[in-house]
Structures are given as C-alpha cells and as structure tokens.
Image (cartoon, rainbow, N blue to C red):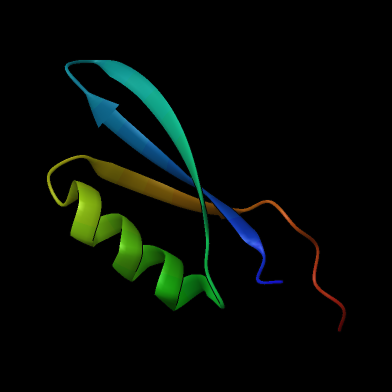
Length: 51
C-alpha cells in the first residue's frame, strides 16, 4: 500500500488538511497541484518508509 500524504491547503486564510495516497513525494505534489493548484502550500508524508 502506498504511503499517505497530507496536503496542506490554504483557502481564505484557513488551513485545511486533506490526506491522499501516493507512491512518492513527487506523485503526492502532482496530485495535490492537480486538485488545488491555487491553494496547495505543503505536502507531508504521514507514513514512515523502510530504508
């Protein structure tokens, strides 16, 4: 199962957190930008990955 990522979104001065699954950081950013191009500020990995 791919790791979970939190998309941190800012809308009208409020912070919203939306969780998504992606295979890596780049895929999470791409998905976040496709959904929230005007408001995405940060992407954070929630799951620890094995080295």
